[in-house]
Amino acid sequence: MYAAEVIAPEEQLKFVCEGCNLEYTCVDYHTLLTSKKLAYFTLGEVEDPKSNVILPDDIIVDCLCHQCLYTALKDEAEHGTENGELKFKLIHNGMGHFSVINNERQGGFFS
Image (cartoon, rainbow, N blue to C red; front, top):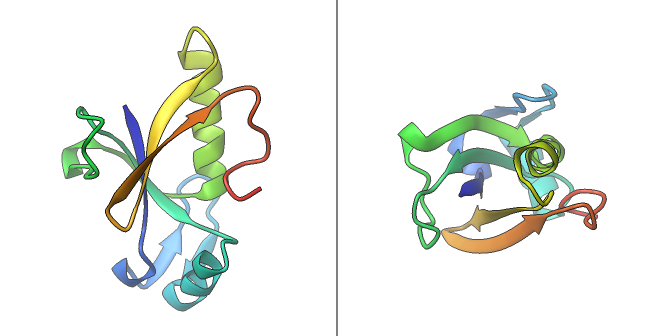
């Protein structure tokens, strides 16, 4: 199962999305995350859906902005599944929440 964990602003000094190169300092990212304008994620896989930890060996991409993450998961849902639907797990502050990407969901995570 895919899992996407929100990267805390305190974890590094600068954040750069590996998909689109969107870059912010930790101070600016903290402001944007708090106001729900931007989130950076680590994308990986978890074998146990109950787990809220992505192990280092299971990381696929270290840093994606929310729009690039949404695009990647939407693409996987459309081309990597038979029914066009992808269940995944969002992890934030150690808490996991299941979500689904499908053709009915439009606009990304914050819309």
